Image (cartoon, rainbow, N blue to C red):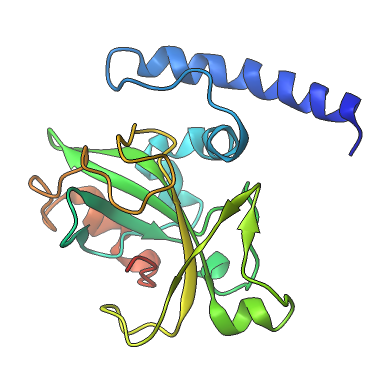
Length: 197
């Protein structure tokens, strides 16, 4: 892709992102000058701020909220099984959407890209890098009973004081999560592959 094509794509992306930034004003302190993978995630997932749109697109709740030994949490993961199983990584098609339940509603926080180790290395000699961001390796056994995999979080819709690509976000909490949430119940049948660690 030449520089002119990149400029046209960038300008189109900015014009699409402006309404999303305005809509979020006052809810989270968003970095309005995001570029690279964070911007790509925002463009690819803007419609999925409505969890019903995400479910219609094939994403479904894994049925739990991920918190752990680190400060903060990862949130509620909504994987799309077909993407998790395809062995590919594409910025515009994240394998997992991440939500947080607050005030009785689910808010999109970001995404997690995930690819299984064996699937990736069947066609690639080195570990994955997406738009300049290196993935984390998670071996097996792990707390989810998954085979070894690579993963990368992108906190595109919620600031992370620890960094936009760090797994754990101290600004995220599982305190209000309940499996009685109607959105989680509706999503339960859409897939159960959980890609966090």
